[in-house]
Length: 114
Image (cartoon, rainbow, N blue to C red; front, side):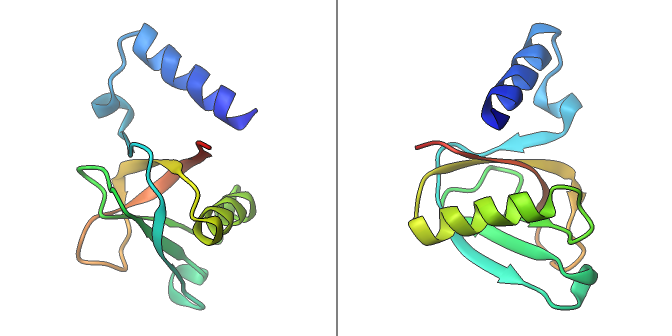
């Protein structure tokens, strides 16, 4: 259901001429999760991860414990990491994680593709 909603959203963006540069959403192709780090105190419990084939603007992705979808997203990230399954990651490229000198994008959505 979530992937259908996400696909609908992406379709509407393309239908009305809104490009990724306006939406500020960066997407990977099919990839897998390479590394996962959970911080006990930084950011109040931030979780960051990298993928094997990152997008051009995002070296990694992050979620904050205070995010409304934190539990669901963390569950999907963990499932993909342990099963080594293929995912597609969408991230806000204008929301850099403060815990790194490189550019880590705020997670918008994670989609299991297999």
